[in-house]
Length: 337
Image 1 (cartoon, rainbow, N blue to C red):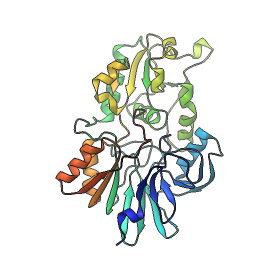
Image 2 (cartoon, rainbow, N blue to C red; image 1 turned 60 degrees about the vertical axis):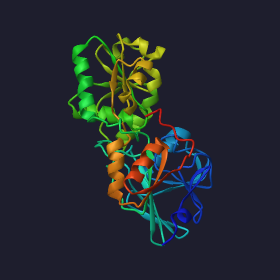
Image 3 (cartoon, rainbow, N blue to C red; image 1 turned 135 degrees about the vertical axis):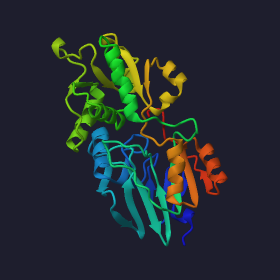
Image 4 (cartoon, rainbow, N blue to C red; image 1 turned 135 degrees about the horizontal axis):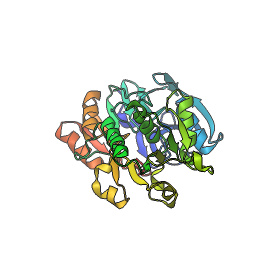
């Protein structure tokens, strides 16, 4: 069997497959990049060639323009391709639309790089798929036992209850533009909310892309319009980037009530620091129980931990008889979650 570090190794640019000359989610421009999903800390412009799912390629083009890479190659979820003798397969990660885990195989060794992932149900993307492997490379954004995410539908019910209690106030929900905003909207629809939902201009393009990809979001309206009769009425829901909820932009609405959908809302101090009145603990990342469950289900004898609370998860692995190490790759952000 091939040694794992001959198949994938950590380099300053990110995870590298030296035999095939590609990187997974590199943090700086490289000749050949395999991209797990469209968030900006994983999907950067300027690579010579990019391989990703169709949705991730489309999202990169929306964000960076059509010439974001020298060339692109589409790969379907579940499809295996061979790059210089190395087999590469994309599996659903359940993070956002088009997100993928990347399995890399050669000479009896299989390594799975999770990218960002979650196990919770999400109507806007394909569900996470556990992939048996020898080495599992896992994210660790919420890798502390304190992080146990509640049911997202329950958090949406809290939002709808607030709307009933304060019908005179416009509820401005901060949500990251790719994935979180669309998930919040879809969860509202699943909870029976049928009224128009108003969008900050920065979210419109990606929401329209999701709809074109078959994700039903219901009636959407621009939040910023010149005509007074088209503006969000009191008691409406406005979805905006997190930076806008405590900005002058939000003050145009009727007595705005600041909400924020994020796994970080588990930490009350973060909510207070941002002036959030209604923190909604809705995360697109695995929580502590899901991280440890996934490691066990993969059957991996070795785990590499990256971008997040690496040390705690490494220690858990060691206590459970699993070889583990942190990768300490710089360049991945978690604040936008």
